[in-house]
Image 1: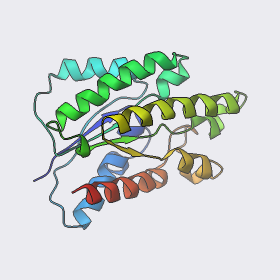
Image 2: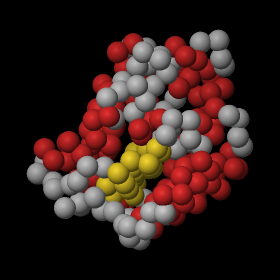
Image 3: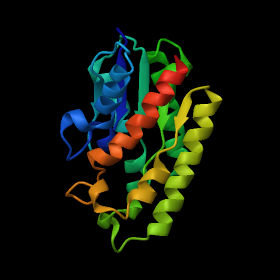
Length: 198
């Protein structure tokens, strides 16, 4: 039986969607459809978390077991709060190394998802959408570089949020967080990447 640890923030817990419709649970459902024996995901994520807050939560839980696969999606709240790119680079690197540790040292079992662009949402009305996009692109460039340097997998989902951002059914009623329909896209891509890595 494979095990799955999902680390992140609101995008991982699935703010405003039923629990089974967040992307980790949808990913597991797709893997089971492919006859993969995998347990329900262990999700460590809370809306609003930054990189250091996720680190603190991991320490508080005292996790010591290892997992067959680990996903990490973090950084949007760093960007939202105006934290520096250098700070993100340092703390993201620490989280990535932790993720590899949770995967029992197997970097090829660690999957990093790019940060979605919340600047396309109705919630961002009146804000500088171009600046938001540029900052998120910078964060993702750093994350991808670090991910590849550690020989982990990097899954691009940002473009999907930008393409689908014009359609209201891809967002929840808060007009900020993705709907289950958007998470299904991420889950399909992640499940395919996991299967290819087996």
